Image 1 (cartoon, rainbow, N blue to C red):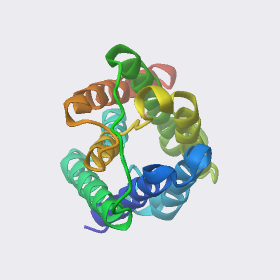
Image 2 (tube, rainbow, N blue to C red):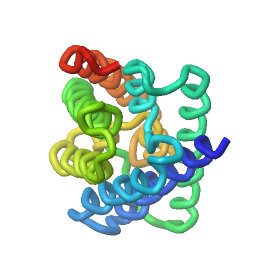
Image 3 (spheres, helix red, strand yellow):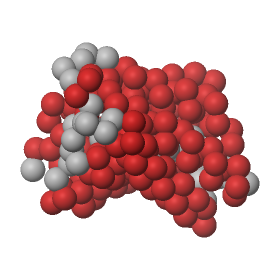
Length: 208
């Protein structure tokens, strides 16, 4: 139960930071730095408890890689979604009256952007937080957080820079994205998580 609660808390603070820095243009161009930093500190805080996934695509990738028990997959994803929705509701309460205009996605560019950086994120997680060659390292949280920061700076204006199905739900609840576009995020992100796990196994054949 502790690990599920940790996944909820970590996802909450990730999505809460996204909302507070983006809704009402709170942090402007520095929002990606705050978002990546929030993920980094939550990974360091909860990595020893739950693995610090905070992302259903990461959970899928870690499960396919063989480092997440099947019985934990659904509870992890449910906890992440609950954390995201609670964070979105908290942001809506704190930012009452803020004008929010949902992002209008161009489908193919958004699919590619979300796929590429979700792939990068899951691949980085697998190689820094689950691989034998990097076992016991102290940099994995920084690497993971900076991957999200880099993606947000690079393609945030194309797809919104979710790279996370739970974040996609959160930004949609906050009306930063439109509900009819949720499939774009989920399709790209879950496929990317699968692809990252397959590539990890291909380039680390002895790492079981």
